[in-house]
Image (cartoon, rainbow, N blue to C red; front, side, top):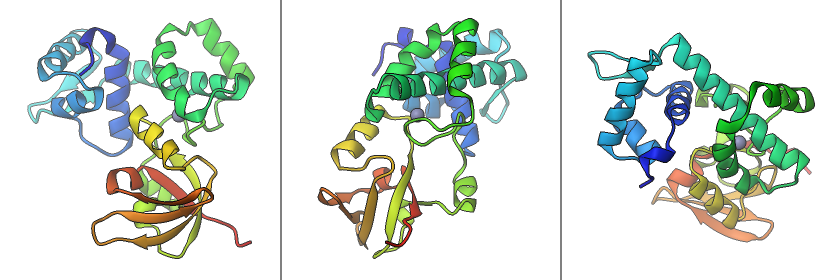
Length: 223
Ligand SMILES: [Zn+2]
């Protein structure tokens, strides 16, 4: 569990924004789980965020961003995205290392630096994990013809389009399993125990459901 001091106001707001973008309703327990902090720490943080007019909590216990909270959250998400792209595109840092680095640096970006990053990188590209500034819903991704590895048909060849990046341990796990953005893989079988067997350039691998759900694919063009 992380020291609650290191989980800033911006981290809470960004987590709520991400959850909303994924179509989830946020309750305090969701935040405790996502941010790896204790329930009392979440209670205290939410109290401060409500006092500052950044979140609202209804009688239903659901946490929602106010307009001001949404603005701050979006700003943090944009800075996170720009820092990841800066580290990867300008400094050649590996994709599985940039998320944690960006988590630290995003809070230190001044408006002037943000403007310079936008000028250099633009705001329409994807980060090294294949994601836009805000996470998209599964429905939006599927409309573009993408499919999560957990639902991909056996026998099919696919290209890895994007990875859910909230959990740095998951990114390291995927990398060590041979799954990198833009890699091509073949689905060997969807197994009875909800794992999926895949073939990668480096060999075969078996992934459990939580990991397979975080990997988005598009059918590979026929060779
Ligand atoms: Zn990213």
